[in-house]
Amino acid sequence: MNKFTALMSVYANDSALFLEEALESVRNQTLLPNQLVIIQDGEVSYKITEIISKFSEKVSFKVDVIVLQENHGLGFSLSKGVIASSNEVIIRLDADDISVNNRFEKLTSYFKKNPKVAIVGSYIAEFNGSKTELVGKREVPISSKEISKFAKYRSPFNHPSVAFKRSEILKIGNYHSIRGVEDYDLWIRAVHYNCSMANIPESLVLMRVGEGMYSRRGGKGYLKNYTSVKYNAYKLDVINFVQFIFGVSIMSVHVSLPVSVKKIIYTKLLHKV
Image (cartoon, rainbow, N blue to C red; front, side, top):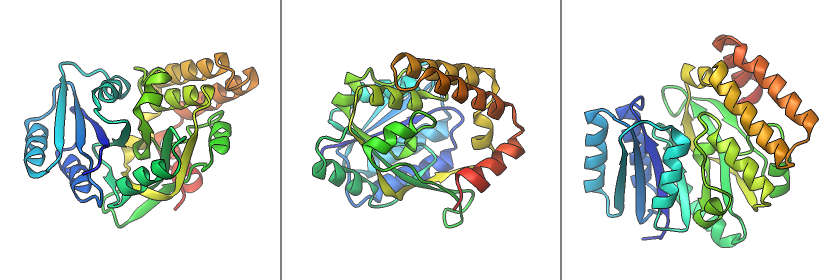
């Protein structure tokens, strides 16, 4: 048994079937955690609680379920999960994605070989329906220098793929409750505080995509939160004023596009297989 924590948040809109597949990908890892923290972000279905309960009975490691009475969003949930972790290394999980079976081993091994690294992620492979039918791939920069440059324009990590050091995340302020962009907000602060970061150039997560993925980045609320993160990046001197205006202008156009057009941009340009 190795001492690291796997961290997941679940909420009402999560699919019980997809959650079961995500948890099974944890159980099938070549290297198991000694703690799994699951944040229940508000009320969920009986089926979801049943799956978590049955999973807890099947595994040898500790499963800590923290129930939030109201839905607060991913950033708030993960901040509670980071605090609840009993280990320094935390590996992120999404409730509808699948970790390849050596993902935990690769991430923990990377930390051992690179002890100064605070955050490490990986590429992701995207699928819709069957996990054998890949529809996209998101490659991200590898080195800390490249990640810091990339963060000026877009998120330099695939959020469901990351692992990080608990102490480093707490040092830079933990996750903030800013819906839709809680991860980008965290990476901006990591750049500001000169955290050492990396990405492994392999797809260690199979990410489930669908129409919801293309529609999430839309609306006034998302644009407001994105603008807030970009403005904070400007205040922290991560980006300059021109980059702030450019980023917000591009996102203003993007959020107003029809879902069908966003899908084409993602599948044909940004996330090609």
